[in-house]
Image (cartoon, rainbow, N blue to C red):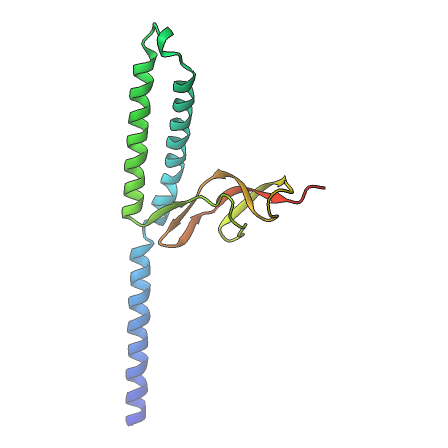
Length: 153
């Protein structure tokens, strides 16, 4: 009888530990789908920032008769502030962006989209990042889309 009681008690302890662990994981990763939905928004803000920077660099301020320079500057500041604020919210909830450029290709963290022939760098290294990858508390929620180096023939 004593053995049965001890086994039952140990079993209950295991069930409580497992339930607590599962509850903690559920709380930790509850926002995963919501965070994945916002990743495209982050990508679009990054693209908008890049395009506005390029446009801003091409404009000659001395020949600006239409007043485009102050407007582009204001637009760039707004996009960068929004991008920064989104990154802070991501960080607050455990979502982190990672850039695997020049790191070894890892099929668990990267999605190879194309190959780049190059003999100057080590094969199986990430050469180009098309889309940055994201993690949620060290769990991959979107693998980075990359181009991988192979030996040139």
